[in-house]
Image 1 (cartoon, one colour):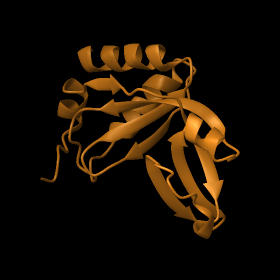
Image 2 (spheres, helix red, strand yellow):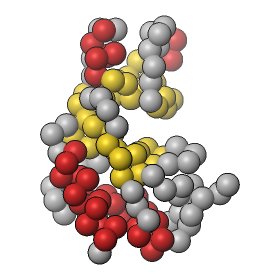
Image 3 (cartoon, helix red, strand yellow):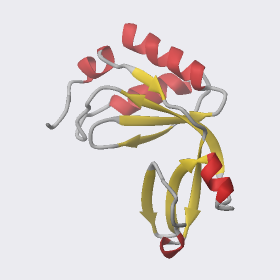
Length: 131
């Protein structure tokens, strides 16, 4: 269940899927996470708790947010110890003037790309996989 570690295989088998919804990054104090909020990611930092939520949820809960973005899931089970996978992807996107906020889950990696650039990102990922 450890996932793929071979960089060439990871790139060759890369299958990217755009998820529905517009996401945003918010930060709250750990004891101030609103009830009924459904974050895609929660990460504890010294300054506060970072949440990735649907922009509509942030608005509903009157949470200040930044970086409206789209989520792309990479449908390959990459190992958490894989070397260079995210670097290769981030570099390819950077060559097209696009920043990315990658998040690794146990089974998949997810890319949060600027709203309006999601189709550009998918094209870059497709080209990368087929190079």
